[in-house]
Image (cartoon, rainbow, N blue to C red; front, side, top):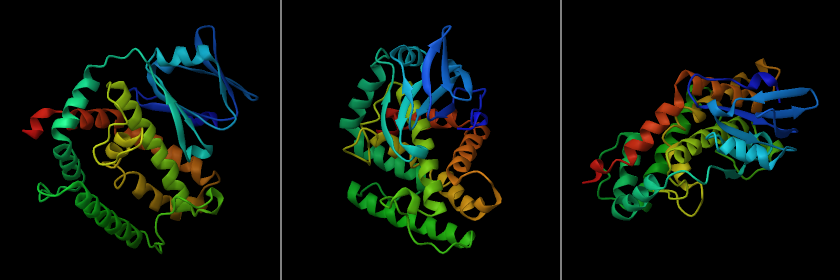
Length: 275
């Protein structure tokens, strides 16, 4: 990990990715210890720490982080997988209870509203969720083909099951960018007191709502970025994974992204849309 990968934003939407290190508390400050040296982490202004390969963390460091509202996410190599997360267990449950009430009363309407926010289509009010998923898949394929044409790439389809080292630049860049996006969205959901497991379109996974919300941004952020990097990668000396992470951090800073995500979540959880 390059130390320059850390960026302190004015908003609490920055994150830190760490691998092959030890995380502890020294002099009341969260500290990352690597063979190159030590890095103090102001976790009160960071939303997420991604804990990668070869990293250990003390119990005190976990307590120190979550008490300051910093989400800890345990990830695979190059952010290719999200395995687990730790958040503050003492956060209030009022928004979670509201979320449950909305889910049982208006889940279909919320799903339709999500679809409308993504694609601007208003002719979906009488469709069931399976039909919506079909429309969604067709529209996404159309966007992918259009991007491929725009960037002059022979589009071979999205691959997620292939061994990591056998994936092309596009699929590796997109997987890393999506993992970064999931971390920020998950941080926003948890910080607001909602459950990431109670999805509206995606179901059966503790990240279901994360995937729902993240889908609002993928086509304009991670997918577009992956197509851009597919062609530009040879002009850089760093790996496609590091390049993708760095570009996502730049986007998050430029777009005040955490504010955007929080506003969208609050909008989706506003009951006034569903009467």
